[in-house]
Length: 93
Image 1 (cartoon, rainbow, N blue to C red):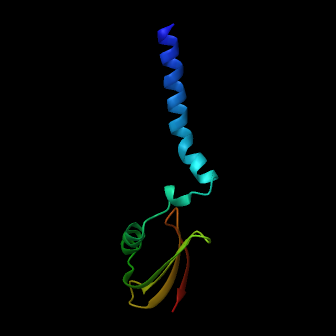
Image 2 (cartoon, one colour):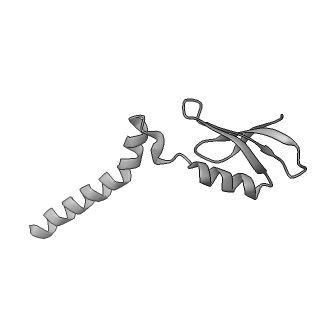
Image 3 (cartoon, helix red, strand yellow):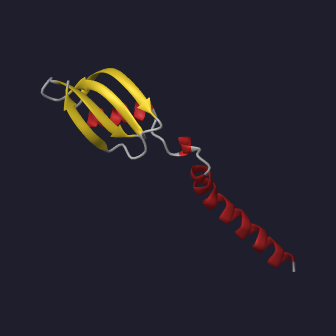
């Protein structure tokens, strides 16, 4: 009987741990998976961008907007997904 109760409690806890991030996202708490600004900069540096001038986090639009220079030295404005780090749009500045 005690083993069965321990198993039920263990399953309940495991399910709760798996469900926590999903419920946090459903409740509007998107900080769980959002990229930090330093992490976003490392991703962009890995793609050849440098000389970051302006960094703006747009939580409502799920974006990070960055003014920087590309590998050719041209000034660009980059829109990056706040959660995946994927570059959405690049525009010459």
